[in-house]
Length: 178
Image (cartoon, rainbow, N blue to C red; front, side, top):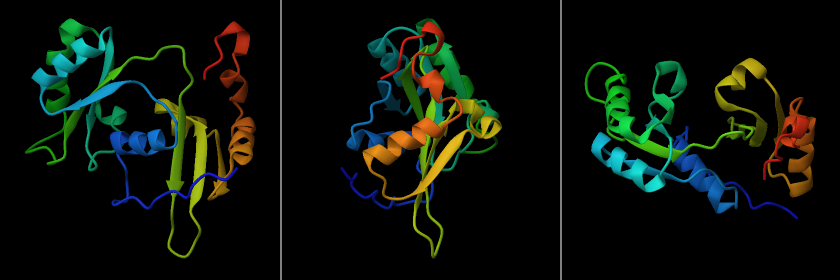
């Protein structure tokens, strides 16, 4: 069966929250999270989520957050307020972009990280790219591309093309991700 066409986003780069909302509309789940404005509300959100959390700065004007020190993983509840304050201070000189938020996200461990992207160039059809992700996206270069739209069978074949596909299948006794 065909997947519905991808809507054109209102801006050229979707930040994580907007991209995950789009993926969610297609039934692709991610970790639970809350998007907040202040370090104090980040601490409250972390308490609601429970356990260690990831704290990330989110803005449509900020890319490659890990390179800029704007992501902190496995943050304990007692450290959320201080960590959120520290991340905000790393944005740089002057006032942060108006759409700057703090994403508080449940930590998921032992899972494979994938990325999904759509690229559009003037005069060309949109392309979908999927690959092994996380902070190693560029380093690994393990990805597969197709013209949009793709159906479920093509999406599965794209995943099977990845060099690290075996790691998605419960490699060496690890739990198979959903």
